[in-house]
Length: 183
Image (cartoon, rainbow, N blue to C red; front, side, top):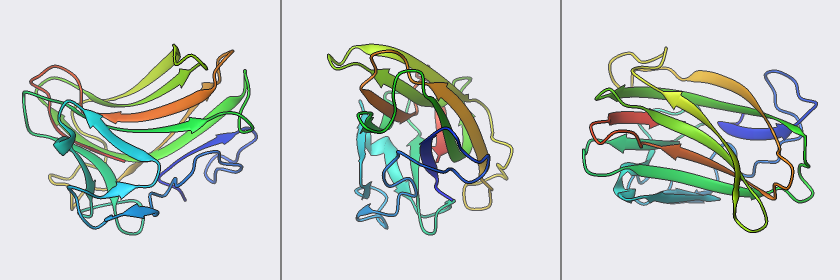
């Protein structure tokens, strides 16, 4: 089962059929055993402090690693993001079923999030949906290595004129927000 995948309906509830997401299991890429410079194919580091964006081997739903934002600073935020062109993959009005596994421990009264954005051909934002992580996920057991991932299933509709889908894992929120979110 992919760590993150997106499929056009019809889909089965637990096994996503017809995925449009490349490298959903994060298995392809470079230096995936190195937290600071590992880079799964299709994903990029962003935010104003990209050192927050790591590939973790401490715990994962895939065979060896996962994407994480580990934010221990009150001065910056990190963001992993990936884009998929929708041409030939999804059309206006299509229902996209999203599935990912998440684990988080967020403190400081803020939030981290997984965000799904749709853009048009002129790079104008058409819509965004935030899946917010506050406090601790259901599987959090005191530290990353001992905790278990929670499976998320959500659905979004492709807005009229959308040409690109972007998914972002973000440690943003108030400056006081610290912690970790892993997918």
